[in-house]
Amino acid sequence: MEENRKLYSAVQPTNNLTIGNYAGAVKNFVALQNDYDCFYAIANMHAITVRQEPAELRKRTLALAALYIACGIDPDKCVLYVQSHVSAHAELCWVLNTFTYVGEMERMTQFKDKSRKHADNINMGLMDYPVLMAADILLYQARFVPVGQDQRQHLEISRDIAQRFNNAYSPTFTVPEGIYMKAGAKIGDLSDPAKKMSKSAENANGSVFLTDDRDTVIRKFKRAVTDSLSCVKYDPENQPGVSNLLSIYSVFANKSVAEAEKEFEGVGYGDFKLAVGETVADMLAPIQSEQARLLQDKAYLDGVLKSGAEKARYVANKTLAKVYKKIGFYGV
Image (cartoon, rainbow, N blue to C red):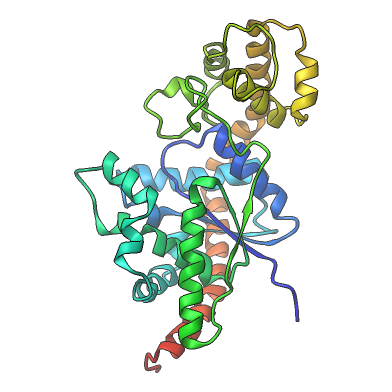
């Protein structure tokens, strides 16, 4: 029997991605496509749990597809598609809702957090988000899911739902395993390194976006918090700001943290921050240029997404048909 090497991941096309998203996710996606059968979705169905401006959502969907390709994701090596182009996501989500308990959803940390942030729009989609995520993963019989620590709870509920269904109807779904990324997975906010760098942070100076121009990138790094110890040393407890900058440099310079530490031994904080900013800006420049070029070729991007959706539908519909048969839906 052929080994299951299917891997699934999805990113919402909301706001701009940060260098933290790049280091913790996109860079790893590029590496993973060489060793796994990867399904990469642009999760626009998840995005509408928070109100979106329609024209902006469409624009960002295409921009994310272009960014993925510009970063090195190869549509010939993986399946790159838009979530809403595969209706099986919504259909399986409905079935899985009947295997999910309200109490489980109410206890989800992200639901509590988002309910506080969007108190005027605590909708059922917000609560049901983890079930749709489970449907995303289980549709493709994905064995592997690259996740950050903040998504661990969602992966666990996906595993629970899969096992619950399998126990009720015989083995149907592959129970997914997490791939927990280490390199660059914990890039902190430049203004408050205790917080994860976020694409929706209130203080835009703390987040460096993949679309920021060179001057903006360098300005943000120059303003990054450090400390009064005046030595470049990786010590997250006592020097969180400096340690965060070393982590960022190691990712974008393709060096170990130890190598970065040695390189900046005896260097002042001003020169250190400038060097990190220039390294990040140098890395982003060709990505931004290629993304801009791709966005001028809408026919190519549409073709990639159409082809990806066709491949995704083929796999997803096989799983959905199996599920419908097992639960007793009458077929025609």
